[in-house]
Length: 286
Image 1 (cartoon, one colour):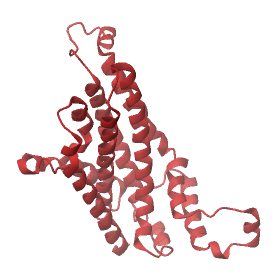
Image 2: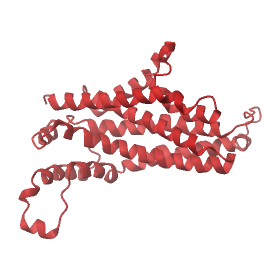
Image 3: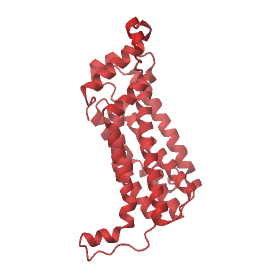
């Protein structure tokens, strides 16, 4: 994972911070042309859009995620087309199975794409020259972290929301009426899970500098996160259960209230990791 995917991104980033800090000294000619200053927030939006990272989000969430319900609905035809005569598809596949197929894709491919984007954005000190450039032109430590993390998180949440809307339409078309309330709760819990995963990337960036190291540490942390479920009193509080909440909700084996404690832990953990990243990166020596 490269810190900069294109030379245009590097030029845009350099120009963005310079324009932000020196906007009061712009030349009259630039003022006449009406050139819009590229601030930190807009810079991060350009980082997502101009480097085609949005395409990876679309591929990881709406495109591949929407294939899950279609595969579940037509599993018998797919097996016949593949010539799998000795394989019998499960009976009575329903909306919960289709939701599980979507969450499996978004929980694996989508998470990998999201963590990769966050790791590349949060590797503030990966390049010492640019790190010095940023640190001499930002006044507060949060400016090094929050714009990068929040724009990345917004892009991931938008992709997940679009994918959930497509899956919802597929479920209604293929399996009949599906509770709108349960779909919304499923989207909410899955969003909290994704934000927590991005929070783990921020926590890794507090101690590591290279994008690959940040990505690996965040992924390992996400894999090991369910371990507290081995202790029975912690099962209701362990936040990784939010990722598959939609399946249990549609099955009727759980209610939205069952995930209240896990949601609270996910929010607090994400906020704590962001604060840690701001504090550590702000005090870090290059």
